Length: 482
Length: 148
Image (tube, rainbow over all chains, first blue to last red; front, side, top):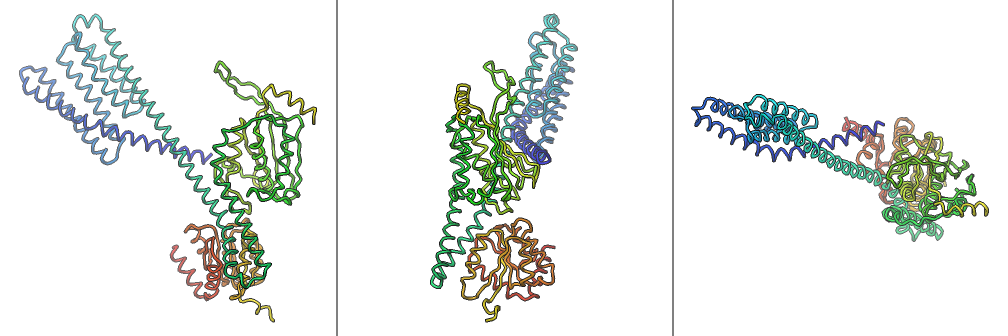
């Protein structure tokens, strides 16, 4: 749980980092343009105030606009300073505030000296620039607040500015149109914000995924490092000794050293092969050959494979398997829909693990039965319905080392070896269960493990689909045969 | 011939990997000079017992072992006056600097990383055996001072 919260925090921090970079890029474009515009307005307003000294109302309006433009310029200069000091959020807030102040003041100043007629209400359109700024640089809440504020400013202008008779007659319609336009623009900015948020979230998720993969690869390298260095030391010891001492050695000693070096070389080769074949298996999962397989027959083919020594690095010696009490509780009727070779591979892997991680003399139980599951199914009407579905559930229970509850979620991940595995005598490469999950998922099933904790053994569950309805005949035939 | 004359050094090797124990025994016992007698232990507890009983010239210890870890074995040996001056070598697959420091702070005289050669191991054994108790104490003291 704590780990999940920690991961969420990291993701949130990464998201914030990307968001800040996005804001920085926007501000670098918006700020200079906005500043230039404010300077032009200041010069224009000051010039107009100077040249129209006769008209008191216009002069006052232009003076007011000059003062506000100067204030906006100051705000923008402070924002630029904040940006240079990497205070991106402060800079964004200042730009937004300057935008709202600038646009509302400019529009208000215009209407102080002008009447509302058929065309002049179009001068309210610049207010949309404020919505644009808030939409790009601020959050949803402030976007809604700003739009509401601009609605109020628009209504105030419409109500308190002298109107021409044509405008007066259509005032409600014009007001409604302008307010709707502002909300439409706000909705558009909301969609843009949402798009940016989704895009950033996807980027962050992809980044996090690649970071996790990196960390798993590091863990894998550390694990493989241990698994390879020790046998390599043994091999170097034998070969170096044989090279230097072979003249003084008895024939039996020579033979022993050569055989041991060769055996260790073979184990190392197998280990490297398994690691390198992972990619190949990942590509092969798409190429499954599903068929109806009577499970009892299949498991009886798998069990003798546990006696084969040497082909796979994880193979268990015949002696090790023979010492074990393998309890098979499988109804003859059980038929699964799976790829024969791949399922054998998965079962072999789980059984090998069960043998490796439990003491000689302890039993291993294998069960398989039909279960009815309440699985959501997509119907042809694209509606999701919950319908009971029959599956085959295979369980493999051992009474061995068990797994700590907090480590269970790690077990089916790529390159993962649990800390106690690395410290134990058990060899492994952290890929077997990952490949098993990959294969079972591809066959439309699921795989998981339950353990009451260290020292209480583990139960591996594999659920696989039953054959399609037209294969029921096979199931009946199997019953008859068994 | 007295037993002490059959070999120059008695070395206890503690490692959970039977193949490694076998290979180290093979590499060291086939040498004519110096001559080694090797006693192996496949876990920390067994290793401690054998060191207390045999009082070997040198102990070679792995770090990652089930049960008692190698550094814990080194701590235990250094903490007991009866075994405090026995030369100790860590032979580990852990190659990071933090692992090396952990081993040295625990009290090991040498930290060898796997894979190593028989020559390197023999050199290390001879080197730690030649260390006097005062030299060992000085090395450990300087390490502790560095850590502080």
